[in-house]
Length: 110
Image 1 (cartoon, one colour):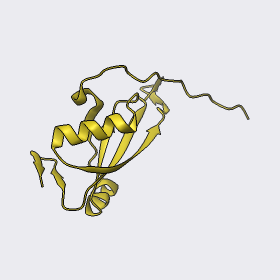
Image 2 (cartoon, rainbow, N blue to C red):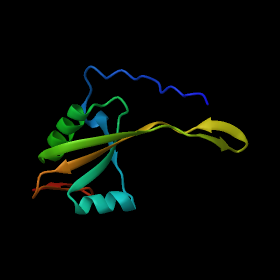
Image 3 (spheres, rainbow, N blue to C red):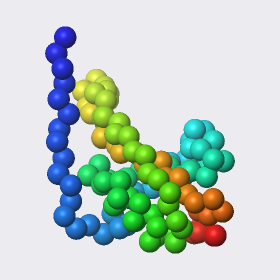
């Protein structure tokens, strides 16, 4: 069995905060996590946990307790008989301070 190496991605030197946070993830699991004061975002693959924490705090004006991340590798799939590959995605589960929340439809409320 051969081991597949994941491509190493360099951390960006300086990026705009809005480039790091791509979009919120709306799914059943993300909705359950929101009950536990966590929000799930799709982020730039090169973003680090401290960068994500700073971006969420400055964009939404909330206090972040912790950030957990995961990288989902792009699967090789067939599209109309041809092989293609889905993009690699990084998700960030952001835990907010008790009493803070983010309204994903419009902004933040504390």
